Amino acid sequence: MEKRPLRPENDTPLRGVRSNIVQSIRAFHIPDLQKAAATLGQHFLYANLAHAQNKPDILELISTQFHFPAHFGKNFDALYDCLTDPIHKAGPQPGFILVLDQIPTTTKFDKEAREQFLDCFRDAAEYWAERKIAFRCFYSFL
Image 1: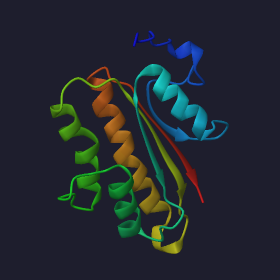
Image 2: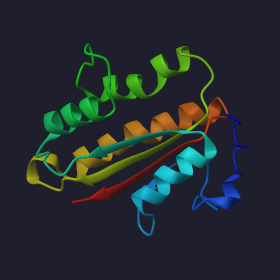
Image 3: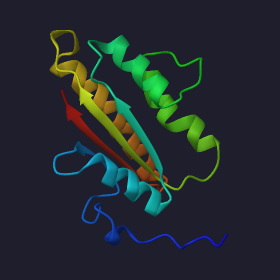
Image 4: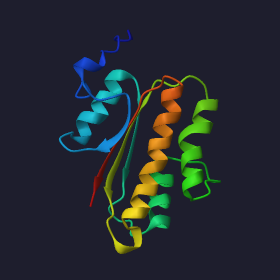
């Protein structure tokens, strides 16, 4: 079977979106982002966090839905590590589009916790930017 050449970002909903960013999903639709990842040959990672109430719940759901290794430490440092180091060691990467859907806004996962959580993804975006690899993360709140 002949491989079709990948289309440029301008042919996807990502035109005009920086290649290394963490931002609200806003007008983007998840199926469109998934299709854009396929079009660009990039990894697509999706986590539905609607049933989480607190940090341990969030980390458990992320670990399961992103298929992190069993030894994942379930803390924000381990989250950053799983988003960067093992993937980098696996060889050249085509890029990433992540969706963190319905992050809880409970008292057990307050604004400060949400910012720390998103900071892990912002730090990962910087890590991949230094390596000239696209890392776009889109999120929504419940």
